[in-house]
Length: 476
Ligand code: ATP
Ligand code: MG
Ligand code: MG
Ligand code: MG
Image (cartoon, rainbow, N blue to C red; front, side, top):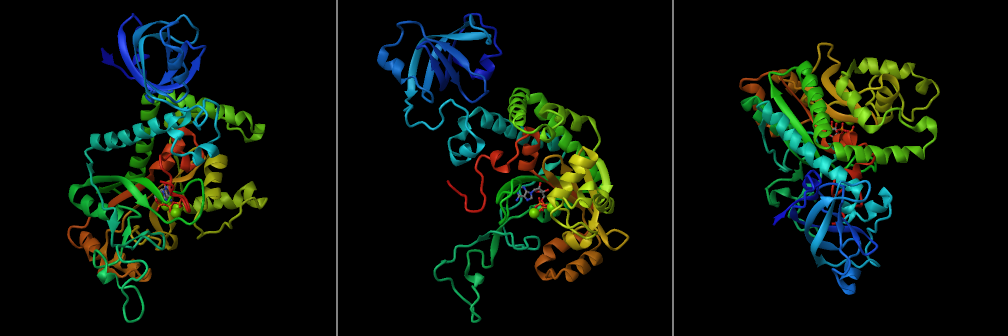
């Protein structure tokens, strides 16, 4: 007899065929109907236990959370709301689950409660849907780039370059913490450390990615990224995943086009392959919104929102235009912004969300940021003040992509590094890309969890990564 996953089973025609299903009990009614779930879908198969088939002792052990192996026949259901029943011919209890102790009883749990019980939350419908969608998007990322002929390049997790880190890096060391070797001036001597120098967890694979792109043409990385973000927000994690494509012979325009196409591809992929889970999350969101006052509810449901994004071009504006819109806004005039607005500021999330949610009501790509607030490798524009940067801002989130055309001119790049006090001696490997056959090139970083937030409609980044790392929180 064939073992089958419930998702597949529910697609079959119930003509009495015999199958084996393994899963966990969600509910058990009247000593007769087991709702069994195996994680392949939020839908359960209803297992029908014939009267007298199991002794009283066994019946008592079929509790919420217990794991079962069920053999039976699938037949059209007599009950309403489901297509088929699994009439059990044998039920084996694989693992008991003490109802008194089990924290995941069927009643609805708040997301806050589930964050406290993070090791168990996989067993809920909400997280079932979120993590199946996350999986699907991860798969779609590879498919998108593979189909375009990009090479997946694994950039290192441990790095010794700190050009970009700016105080957000996690140090990697094997030196004894209680008594590290020291130089005469008292500073820790990293020459004696494992790598003979100080090393960190990567904050971005971009610089290494550029090395590969200037040989392969088009590459992408997709891996974990680490930032010691010391603020607790709903959009920052200390460990997150980032997709970073890097393309030779691309300018900023090509870069924007690719990023927009990529985001739309991921949304379309989820709509096609995760419809059921998206509908479940849309429903959940709609119920949550009913609790809100009318003016706080969104105009579109989750699916309509995704459809809208698919069918409309992203708005494209310059940083200067963005600042002018903000200065002209009722929000600014009524002093609703917490942070100041003037040419030169880094856009704060409240500004980004105003542009997207209130002003344009669609995703926005902002280009031409002031050089002073952007990284050294971004290409200087002709005005000498702004760089060929582009950020993509999404409703409900703010920045989801940061990218740029890179400075391919060696002299300009070195001047910029000098101005920003970045020692060029340690970056000779990077500068070689400009010394030998330099090319215009560009790339971007899409925060994977922010993309998952966007697609699932979840609002806290801790709820879209299986194991969230945030300040003072690294439970297991
Ligand atoms: P933010 O302004 O939100 O702090 P950033 O400008 O510091 O982001 P970048 O260095 O541009 O981030 O990184 C590229 C992308 O990686 C961002 O657009 C975002 O989607 C994602 N990202 C950055 N930091 C985090 C984080 N701490 N947690 C999750 N995603 C992040
Ligand atoms: Mg940041
Ligand atoms: Mg930013
Ligand atoms: Mg950024």
